[in-house]
Length: 264
Image (cartoon, rainbow, N blue to C red; front, side):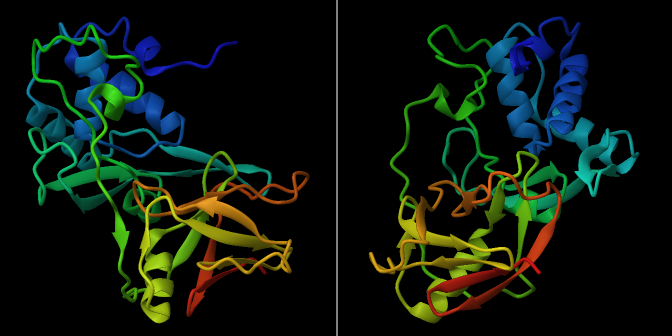
């Protein structure tokens, strides 16, 4: 069966309220984090005839969250399904689309964990009402609805105020958050950019991530790019027969230019 897409989910929604409900239910089922801007952008791209104010969607989501009306995130845990009510976290927009969401705007993001919220790419292009979307190439890639902006993300370095944890996404990939790279860069003294390579080695007990190339004498390290949006590092288990368990979290130990994810 073909994978369901956003356009399939809200194709028959009778009004914008139903479209919001249908889309949010789908995203929670898929394990995705989301903001009201993302919901608004998707609906205006796919169903431009539905008229609403973006702020009304934000209010609807806040009310649903506080009244415990949102669905539960589900993920496997030691052979059983575990559920969690969505978290709500406050993020600050960088202004990737300044005519829609200026830099410094506070945005509520909802997700399965605080780490997921902190690392979610929530800034999207939100079409205005009655704006033509005939030339949009892919309604499900909202940020691609406008020409790409030349935004160079720099990781200058700072120490974390709390314990840094890597988490495993629903697709079994491990995600090491930007905070870990910030701390490693702070201790190492050399800034990094989105798109730079880091070098990852995995064993049964730990994952080691280096910000510098260890060289050809260390073939156990594989390179991965730092995500240009969000600054995180994401990778699957090196052992295909033993993928990481979705929903699990692991403490990170940070040294100069080095991150160690403790699996044991």
